[in-house]
Length: 272
Image 1 (cartoon, rainbow, N blue to C red):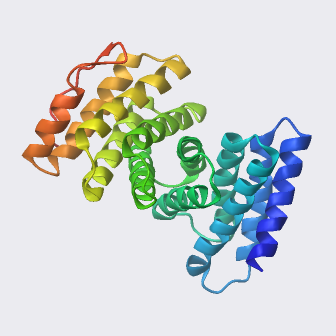
Image 2: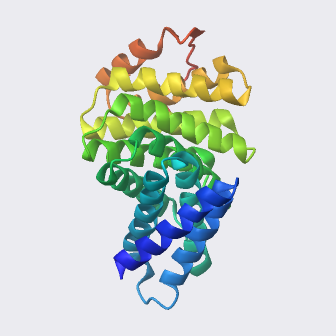
């Protein structure tokens, strides 16, 4: 049954990529329809969601691999569609969205897809998809970012580049829905630092990449890079404050400099 659903999604997404300019919209429809149909009539929806999510994502990833293009937009559309499909049958929680991010990374690693692209576009799609979920952008971005770090850590990927990609994705996603860029940058930074600490990763390297991701996203959106960098740096230091003094010193030293041509100035107070 799982193979059948994966093949169904793969074929449908392949047709979308090859036959329309709207890869995101078409993939949203495929993922939403597949997800909602699979969950309707199921007694334990929560227990079934992970399997359905995996099937839809694998089908999407295999389609882009076969066609040789469309990975970013298809992943973005698939994530939005999955959340939409879950919402048609049950309740979407921010925890389930974080789990979706981890699953996307795991499946990307398994099928040999570019994990960096998947991280960025999954984060972007997840932020867009959570606009109707009753959480703040700070909470959503933090959960998505920590989920990405956890997922990449478990497949042995690079946490530094993941930090940059997930911050970039969450901020550009917020920009698409007219969300607060500063709030999103801060939340994503907090999630990355906490996730990195849990994974035993290099906080200094990750903190620099958090700010670099915020700067890249701000430039792409045409907003002031200094403001996004400051928000990301401040969020990173705030999260470090919940870990310990050594973490604060490490993160502060890493971000209190010029990154990608932007002088970074974190704002006090750092502690909540």
